[in-house]
Image (cartoon, rainbow, N blue to C red; front, side):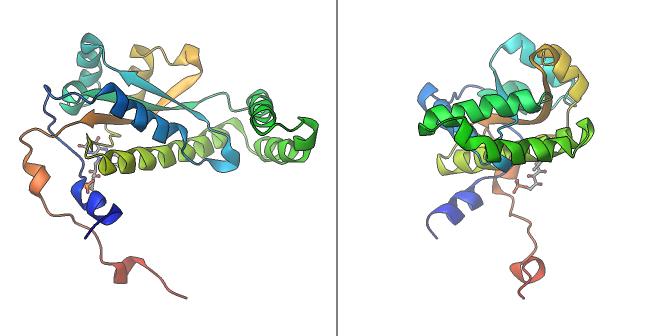
Length: 209
Ligand SMILES: Cc1cc2nc3c(=O)[nH]c(=O)nc-3n(C[C@H](O)[C@H](O)[C@H](O)COP(=O)(O)O)c2cc1C
């Protein structure tokens, strides 16, 4: 069994990281690039990613994450955040980026901009946030897969107090709120590393029509 399936069988939600082992800067950059390249609806990228290395801060954050050791012991703690200001201004900026990158006029993208603005206008603030959060989870999937291909351990984590994290990381003033955590690093002596994967068989989850 080679390739992506081998990688995905290798990965697991790491409970115990080796605090001495660090992810190199170039590997970290690759992981961050995988986040940047994630797909999102309309390509709207309603996210930012906070990389936390400050030890004292991580001790504080751990207290607001049910004391889970991954928060302090992994090499880097990545906090996947959603923008709380996905609005017409954000869309305009994206369109300007697209025009510059693809060397076309902003005017030629008017219809595309209109369809995006229309889909935002049909939603209230709460719905926009929910929809944006769904996009952030796609980037989490990309990050987990990128980690697995590089044999870097990771643990997706929702078990934390979002309000406390937002406060400790100063996210409100950045117009962000925390969605999900992903500590990355290298497994320590973790009994879960050898646990067999528990997944429903394809016969139960794949429907053919
Ligand atoms: C969105 C999400 C949130 C999770 N939150 C936590 C968490 O707070 N703490 C933890 O130890 N594991 C957490 N997990 C890990 C899951 O328990 C784990 O992925 C699942 O049991 C499947 O096991 P595997 O990933 O090792 O194959 C989370 C997973 C996901 C996808």
